Image (cartoon, rainbow, N blue to C red; front, side, top):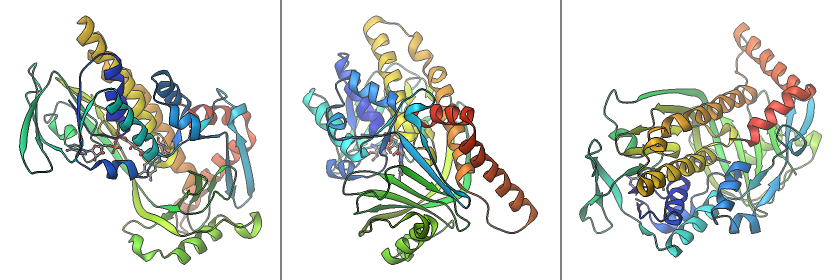
Length: 387
Ligand code: FAD
């Protein structure tokens, strides 16, 4: 039983079906909702490898764009890092998460999988035994009790699965980074060839490609900001200021299609399994979007879990399932560490006191290291595009 039809649940479901393991996905939202929910876009090389190796990459190989450069704009100028020539010499594939989800849903159904939309998991029990149960509520309000051999909690950060682990059986560590972003989707083509991170005294601004018609932008805003206060004009004025368009040229403007505030927060559960329950993706570890790792981690963990479940169910080999947390957590922590480093790279504290000035000097030094040191650039590239 798989809870949630995001990247984690859908990749897991597809891989299990390919391995001859029956599974059922329940998703509390409608199909239209999950197929239109715009979030991630930057897929790491390992993610593309997993999807390609499992026949899930036709859409992204046909329509995704390869990206190999990111740029930083600061008070002291602009520099670019072409990471195709750095680190492991890998690139990103940009493919909107909602398009990937649409492809994965279609493939799961084509492989004969059962996917119940508008069906929420509302209770999980029996995780200590060999026949756990999930209580669901469907669109008609009817409740049904489902039984299975295992439960995969792929239901995201606000899901039920992580709350089903008894008190004391897993430790949650986490941090609110004290930074918020206004996440924007603009109906405009990308203005710059590269992902661009603008570090500005008024706050961070980011430019990220999505499709030829739509570009994602981010603006650092105060905690508690109401997105409705940001009219299209105010958004474009602020983006132009922070992206320093007077120095580097204009942005292609268009209507803002979506605006929402993201509070940068991260957490990790340890372990990410309990009895017959295994957590995957945001349910296991929430990661700030500063380094675009969340969907990539979700797909990596889905692959590890699919292989472990197939070993157990086909060969009776418990080893990989027992090691699931130990196999995933070091990679989760590496992604968390890099995302945290990116937060410190991109955001300087406001204020004029000595501590703020000290932290801003550290931030300038980090950026300068990245601009001038090949060793820093190689390490950055390896973590930026890797998982
Ligand atoms: P989700 O995608 O959240 O899916 C969980 C699913 O479970 C949902 O469909 C939900 O409706 C369902 N569900 C919840 N509760 C229940 C229940 N009780 N019963 C049944 N179903 C339930 N990551 C990247 O790798 N690269 C990026 O470029 C990137 N950019 C991002 C930009 C933004 C603005 C945001 C918000 C996130 C971004 N991320 C990025 C993060 C990425 O989107 C998430 O990490 C990813 O969606 C996690 O996938 P998931 O399957 O674990 O969870």
